Length: 268
Image (cartoon, rainbow, N blue to C red):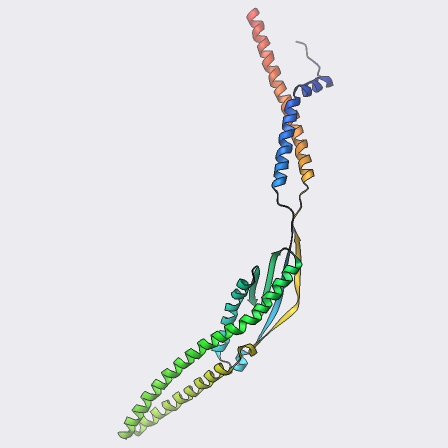
């Protein structure tokens, strides 16, 4: 059996024979890559920013260490930050170590970030005194309730003291008198606390001051080179078409040899 030496012209003939296979693979690869590139989002630039505000509290000093007023301040801040987020869409507000952080992300322009931060700071300064005033109203109601309870206890003790004085129980009367004095002192403290709650201006119990200038961050999404993508896909499609052409051509040759061998066997 003679061996056939493959020459360059044979490769060229094979490529010409499979030109439609190569062209088909090229068109499919380019078409799919163009479709994929067209579905990709357009590169955009977004702006983010944040500002820090220091919260200085004077609640404890104003109410002589009263824990209720300090808790009211914490509660007021907790109610105010969600209100700021609701009033200014896109704003996130948080509190840590007496520092309130206002941040805005994914804005279309730097001006939109600055405007949102300025608006959020304004809303914060407006809403915090209102929230604190509501907390003080609640504290005042609780204090009045405690006063009523102390008054009821005092009336009972005064009645018992009157009865014991009538029965000449001197030792017991002295003990009751001591309890009555203690209740009267508590009532006086509650009244002073209530007067302070009703007289104080919530806006004078804290100071909000900005820490430095707002920070601004610019983020640009990655831009894909669509032409390069399509070119690479076309090259890969062309290579795939060439390989597929040689493979199909080989299968056709094998089948043709089998057919010739079968015909030769029939003749012999």
